[in-house]
Image (cartoon, rainbow over all chains, first blue to last red; front, side, top):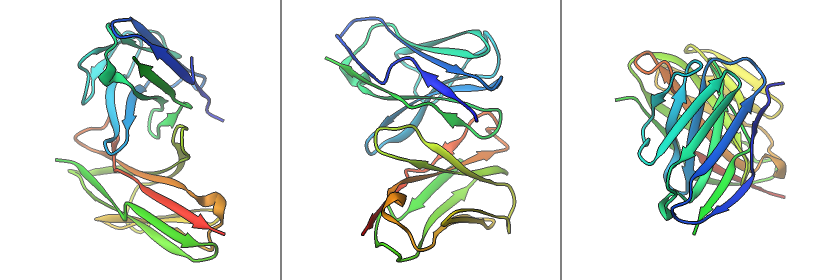
Length: 109
Length: 111
């Protein structure tokens, strides 16, 4: 079975803090993805990576950066968290179908 | 522009009352259509991939079908545990690295 894990299920941060969300997959997938999901807006792609040290902007990259130093690990970074980044963050991996992690519910106060 | 539209937004069924969810798509060239199930507060769970018109896939009470313009997720004799949001996504030839998701259909099955 494909396993995608995320570092935290719930996270509360203050405005201006630097936030790291980590994702690990165990299926040797080249492709990994970060989404955010908000009521009424659906799933929106933030960034994706198709290889180590490679990254591509998704639909809403502003305010975010990513890092992929190892194939199995893809990190999402909020350089200076803002309240409008309060959301559910979902990591996925897969070379064709995408398999999702459990999600991190981030609250920025 | 690649687009996916799901209907209805919400569906309430009685236990045992069969129905279908719709996913309409417009893409430059379909490279796969995907169905997911999402429970509240959790990540989407992969259900099916369909590649070409006429293809069907089944899993327990769920059956997915595909035509050139839409896909249906048929739910036969649903149970309360089938309550969830069902998401449809497509991969197109112009965006092979990404999936385009619909907004989802939230299904509630009452006992």
